[in-house]
Image (tube, rainbow, N blue to C red; front, side):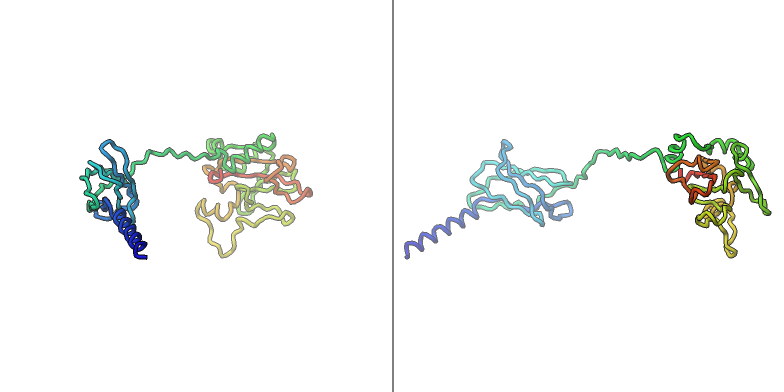
Length: 278
């Protein structure tokens, strides 16, 4: 029993000696003496052969265990966002721990190459897309906003009536409205949203542009747009991207521009696209 105990004690002593052995320790810090976590510490020979490599802990500390005597050591340390640096360390005596203390790295911002970010987007916005599709069908009449601005007519309603089958009539206040005599009704839209047109109760539509008695009158074109333009002549020419006119239901292309409630109504349609929807 005594002989076995002596053997066990001898092994424990040898293990403790091997654990302590030759070692190098230290702490990697930044210029503010704060520990740098996950810095990589390499121990190299004079021929740049790696003997060991470790990462620092949360406090920037490291410990490298040496397997045997080395004539000359080089300690190389690198960390993200810091300049790499090397230190020459002397030979460590057997069973000795060489503590190098604080090893400071200088901050080096990471230089990123310039990025060329390109966003691919369709050249066709909603208004352009629908105009393009309808023109391909060969129906309707289309008036670009640039042409209207260049013509600068005193009345957009009259300008369109001179070039289409639209007629113009005025109410007691002098507000113009357009219509096609051969159609059951004429619907006028801005960006495919109903204008304040008088088409009767037989065609369901949102009541847009109807001013209540207690609502103050609009003083600007923007206020008119928010309320709903009362007529084509109230739409500023510089706001218009395009105007499309369909003089009968036969000309209305299939798809979104189907504003007539049923086949019982043959409604002519005028739709104005403004630049904010173009």
